[in-house]
Picture 1 (tube, rainbow, N blue to C red):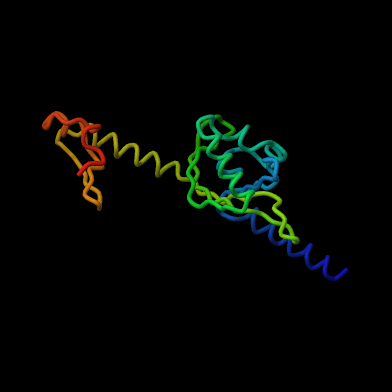
Picture 2 (picture 1 turned 120 degrees about the horizontal axis):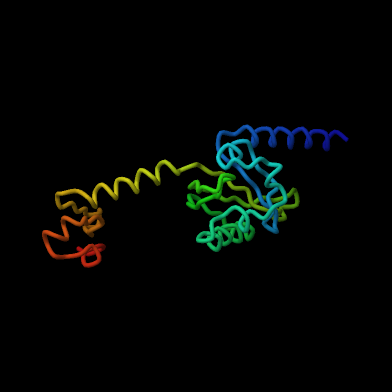
Length: 176
């Protein structure tokens, strides 16, 4: 009786920590159905835990262009291969996209059997939007702008650089 009571108390403490964490945390079972959805996931997506519990995460909440890749991350985690810093979009209750940076971790029971995947995310929508805005500003600039990466390869080439040199970004990107 004592061991079970202690384990139940510990599980309740874990559930409380997950629910009140300031990062979106969700879990799926081995068949891809949601079985964990914390308050931060609700705040991010607008979907409550009641809205999503038991529903298939990839089929119902991932944009079409990412379903295959997200499913692969979950399939890998179910096989014990965890993924860190995977970026993908989630569909909100309002039908908009939020960009999430995810760490997917294998969930196991006391006998070490795989029982699902837990994902801990971070909303990176603002960062993605800012990067896209910078890219638009660079491309529209009146002056030629180009960038070179640490290995000496061109990684930025705007329209003014094309107009000045005659080389398109396709001609120079990734080249020395």
